[in-house]
Amino acid sequence: MRRLLTFRDFDWTLLGMVLLLCALSIMQVHSATLHTRFSGFMYRQMIWIAVGLVGMFILSKVDYHRMLDWSQWAYWVFLVALVIVKVAGHKVLGARRWIALGPFQFQPSEWVKLILVLTVARYFANLGGRNLTWKEIFKAFAMVGVPMLLVLIQPDLGTTLTYAPILAAGLLLGGINLRQASILLLAAVVLVGGAWSSGKVLKPYQKARLTSFINPDNDPKGSGYQIRQSKIAVGSGGLWGKGTDNGSQTQGYFLPIPYTDFIFAAFSEEHGFVGAIFVLLLYFLILMRLIQNAQTAADLPGSLIIMGLVAVLTFQIAVNVGMVIGFMPVTGIPLPLMSYGGSSVLFTFLALGVAMNVRIRRFVN
Image (cartoon, rainbow, N blue to C red; front, side):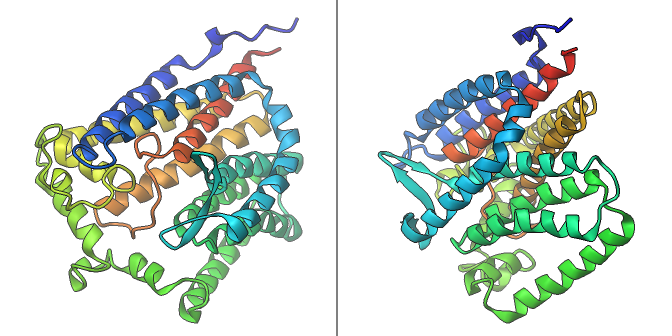
């Protein structure tokens, strides 16, 4: 007998932790934009979270097997969207990343992450988890590599990098062996080295951002400025922080874009080491909950979907937090559920909706 799906099967514990992070995000966006021309961003963030919640509940009710069937068509649609962005996209600070839809800005590259998670999961699930051939590995690389190149030339290095963990998770869970992984790793090192030295793939400012974190004091007013101010903000927070709306680096406008890329630095300044650890603990619990849902999924495609999402979220969290404390280069990767931004918020909630979908259907007989 087929068991009816109800919201009783929803992962309310996971949702509770997610909403707590969203509440902290709203509070910090308000503080980071206080007395600036961006002071209304808190309300926009609330709207995006509300829209994301609706989208999450909708996606949780659509059978993820249907999503897998649709993913191949969505993949091509979004490839076309990325081409349109490059040709006629809205240009901001020298980069074309958005398509203007009336008063809203649509960033296809953020949505491509979800499409890639589904596409890669479908591809490896169809292979049945057996040992991969080199032909199958190269097809997977092409599948992810094409949108990576289209996003890189926008240029948007940060979002480009977030596609890589999707491929890595698919290969690891899809059946790649140690010898193949070693060869690919060596090839990646050679290609990255060649791309770096050629000067044709990365622009000079992108190289400066990728290397300035090693010694930001070499250019304190240029490429090292962001990391220096971020580290000052994190360190000045001490154990308990300076209190909401009281961060000298944040409120003094020294910390760059404290409501997006450097929101964790702003939060750490105002809420200290204790607040920062609390946020990191929340992220850890959310990721562990998702992994648990992947382990209890009804089939291989469900597990691959959730682990692909875990790979993306883990990468974004690690890079963003590492960036603000000077352990990673500045790449413009937002902190999930914390950084301001409609595309990022919607992607995260829709991704969680797909994960909830997999969880709910593990009860279907």
